[in-house]
Image 1 (tube, rainbow, N blue to C red):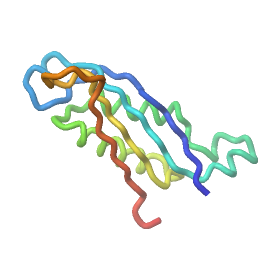
Image 2 (image 1 turned 180 degrees about the vertical axis):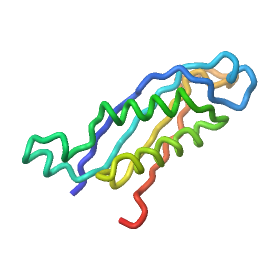
Image 3 (image 1 turned 90 degrees about the vertical axis):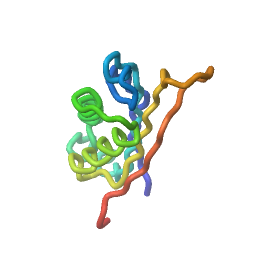
Image 4 (image 1 turned 135 degrees about the horizontal axis):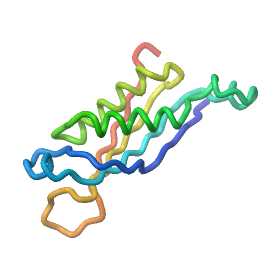
Amino acid sequence: MTDLIKVQRIAVYAFHGVMEEEAKLGQKFFISLTVEADLSKAGTTDNLDYTINYAKLTELAIHIATQQRFQLVEALAEAIATQVLDAFPLAHSIGVEIEKPSAPIQATFDTVSVTIFRKRTGS
């Protein structure tokens, strides 16, 4: 059984990037999370204790993105994935997408993004 909790395009203003200007000026990022978990007990009991609270999931992602600085969005995604799996034992796996719509690229584009997928070890 595969059940998913998704939180899509959480907007944060942060200072990630390799370039010095990115560290000084910052920019907007979007974070999307897809968590795989067995939600059947939550569905049958209507009890928050048997699911992953998406408000807390969102708060954790925002905290990591705004309180730490990374040169690479890959490292930001990895930090979020690791901490989500540590904080939410019900989570079997997580997908983290980081969008960087103002990446310093000399081209016209909508966004650049990195998506990673991680599974809980030993499950």
